[in-house]
Amino acid sequence: MIKKNGQLLKIIGPRNPDLDEKIPKNVQNMEELLFYNERYHELKDEGGDHNKDDGEENEEEQQEIDNYDKALNQLKDNHLNKFNKFRSAQSTINRLLFGTGPAAGSPDNFGPSSAMDYNEQMKDIIGDINFEDFDIGEEAREEIEKMENMILDTDFFNDIYNRTEILDEQFSPNQTMSKDDALDGGYASRTVGELVNGFHEIIENYVDSATSIKNTLRQRYNSYRDGDANLLQSHLDDYDNSKELMEQEDGLEDMEDQADEEYSDLWELIEGAEDLAKDQAKYDQLEAIISEYDAVNGGGDNDDPGRTQFIKDAFDRFSGFLTFVKEFPESFRNQLYINEYIMANYGTSEPYSLDPSSGSYLYENKQAQFITYGYTTAGANYAAFIRDIAMALFVVKLIDLVLFQGGFAGPLGFLRALGQAFIYTANGIKQLTGSNKFRWQPLKISRLLDMTMPLFLRMFIIMRSTAGEGYNNKKIRRLQAAITLDKEVSLDENPSYIKGKVKGNVDLLFIPALTNLIPNQNGSLSGKTYTIEKTKVYSY
Image: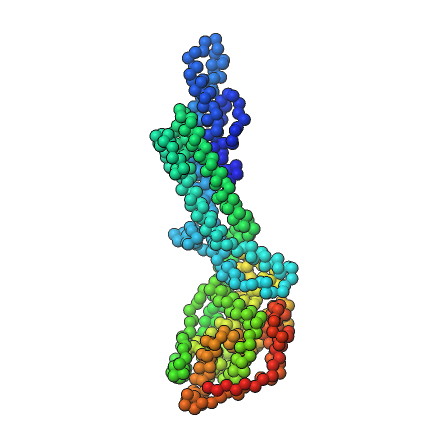
């Protein structure tokens, strides 16, 4: 409608048209109506002055008059009907961008399987990852660019919606303008629909006013073309760069349903036990002890977060992992000794089954999980540990598929990668909880790692320990509570200390690929090995 050579320009007509003197059969636009208006009136005025001998000429002139009368009668409806094309296009744009349904149709209310829905999911999933942190090859970089090109700025959706809403008001075909209003002027405040209607109300007998309306419409068109149309075209160019999103639309819903099914299977596997009432007494004791030591804790959350939230949570954890690997903060070194003390004295032990009747969720087998996660609800800490493993397996597998294996560009490809990552994660959880062993290759470029449950827990407690004093102070309180419950000694009345020694090389089995991928500024971290030899004493 407003682009170069769009419908509005076709209504107005090209500037300074090169037209024949005689009125043609197909008068098409305002410029032509204005151009031929004078001849139309001349022919009508001369109609009674011709001789009967001029029959052929009279017939031709009468045809010209009929041509103009036809234009006067039909062009108004033809011009206003062109606005319906804009409204139809707007409806299509809104449907594709924001979906359908009672709660869809705008950036604030978009439906499932719409462009904005997929865009928001993609932003949630990969928006927080700084891919510049990865030293990866050209092929993987191309895959990243495909993914990044799929993500559109919020301005894309807001601008298109807001501009088309404004233009919709301008181009409504049901707006009218009376003859008196058309002659009074004040066209700047009028909509395009009103001006087109007003032009046709007065064109036959008021050429000067009709010319003013036409000139106002041309100014309006130039403004739309250079402003709104350019902005919308720029956004549509961005959309074309990611048009796989719509070109493959027919398969998206099926692939999304499959991804949801795979996620549901995974969540059903890891959601944990609900009836562990017998073990709750110990957690009540621990909570009371912690309360005396002024610790703060909460209950576990076993609600299914949904596929998208699970993915976002997984990447949030992964972002913290990247920070740890890159910075390896000084504060971590002190916590390393405490963590090793926890693992040595209050570690994690079999069984690891997901069947609550096996005893795998009991405090006596999962004391280090309590100290790590701090939930005072029976079974919640082991469930949180399993969820952390699932997130680690899932997010690393997803990155490996998309960045290093390739072939997963576009929404369909990405959803296919999600499904494969969920299946891979479920298989990993089954192996770990069944045999306490899992052969893990975190990224395509890394070696295979023999992972166990204690090794995963060591990884998670280290990662959480880098969060700062808040977490570590609570961790110490939980350690104190575990010691008090174990030794029946009140530490606020009988001060004691931890003496921990870590000697030699700490083999960072869980991040060898990342230590190669991500530059590290700490000189003590070389490849996959962190070299230390220190003894620490902590009083409490």
